[in-house]
Image 1 (tube, one colour):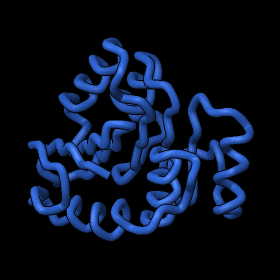
Image 2: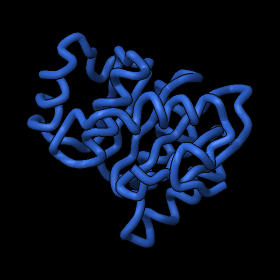
Image 3: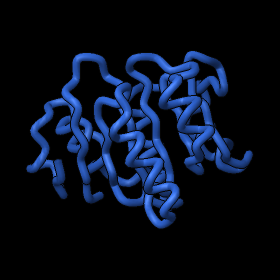
Length: 156
């Protein structure tokens, strides 16, 4: 499914997330992916977060806004992947290491490199993945049990 805004979204879960989270006031001037990360952490009330492939400055910026976050403590309710690789995909999407049924995964930079776009397509088709949101600068992955398998392109 492809939609550019909330009006094309027919999933109540995704509609609520888009309208009550993604389309709210910007929280960061550091870029769209950082803004989506901060908004999503607040929206889902995340507690245990795993950052894959980020530097200390990035983690510090997030911790300044959310000082009660626990980092690298499995099981994770939120995973941020800076660079999608086959290893990251296998570990956190396919094998779901440290992943709960409601874990949210945010992947930066899903477009621009053919190998990353191929991995993103693999994630969309993976049996464990229920919902994906492609917002061009990154993508969100949801493993929600009982949720219909859907894929959305959202303009933010």
